[in-house]
Length: 223
Image 1: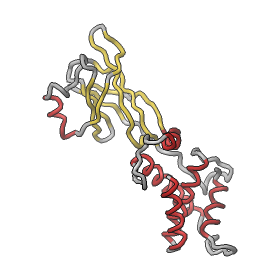
Image 2 (image 1 turned 180 degrees about the vertical axis):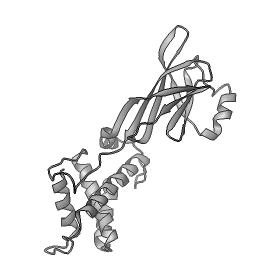
Image 3 (image 1 turned 60 degrees about the vertical axis):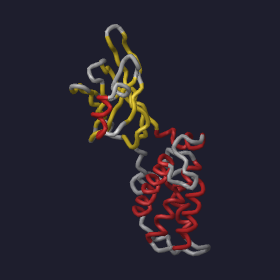
Image 4 (image 1 turned 45 degrees about the horizontal axis):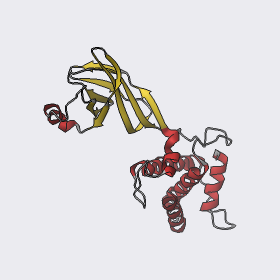
């Protein structure tokens, strides 16, 4: 789908048959609604806030929808006593997986499991033999604080790299500043859902109750 296609579809769904009631909506307002629609749809796909309560990988369709946003990156890390801090990328949106690559003595480049835990529980995890960082059991844990991930080693091994798999921010859709032929990055069927979401937003802002209800139904049922 292109910017031009999306604008035409939004105006078509907002206007009653043969009417031009909503043709004077400013383009920047349509742009704002489209980008808010992208954020809302992605959040529902990942968090599972939809009629079937499905999360981001519960069906192959949802995996396909979100695959374009998945990104791998080795974090820049800094050692800090019993953990390393890995700086979160600037395009980070949602967490998926974090994998430390560690070494101990002659064992190098070992990928171990790391569990995401609450910062408030760090002391308990460090004191408990079954949950503290362990090279022998190939497991550790990490937390998120501010703009960094803290990955714990508790001086049992050395963390050489931290591989983060995450959902990046979607590209901003500049309907007003970019050419109408600009192609959206999402699959065509997901673009249609985003259009319906944008229609719902604009219809709500303009108190167009019927179009709001129709667009909401289409957007929710198709996710």
